Image 1: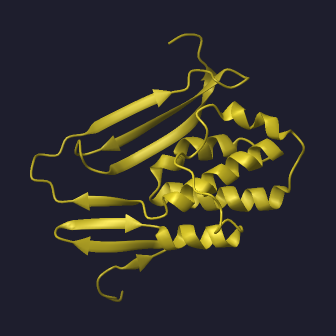
Image 2: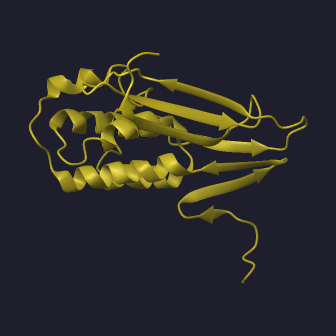
Length: 180
């Protein structure tokens, strides 16, 4: 083992320490993938996707290049897993189309990259707690919004009502919900 000093950068994540706080950011990584996929000059968006993902269907259902689609979604997955829980739902939706992406799926994917352009400086900040830690968990589901009636549900967990998330997930359910 070797002591390399205070952690500053590891696997595409930047760490900053400040007054009892640690911030994790992937700003450099986000800027790098925007450049890689030719989206550095794109128009920024304030949301990760449209409220109704079916809004992209007007783009058409002709197939697009699967390899570049896989690379773009894979880049988003890495960001989502490390520091960007705000991407969980839309990355789940995009991942469902990996076998046969269409122009509509590519438009949704580009929307996410435009969102990243606006929010590249977002980070998770962990601070010392002055109170006892408690688990705060929230969950939600889209209640069978897809054609096959399977719900996408998600959760997020923090240890402080004002603190950052310590765990998050968005997943398409295996079974069909018949009621709430």
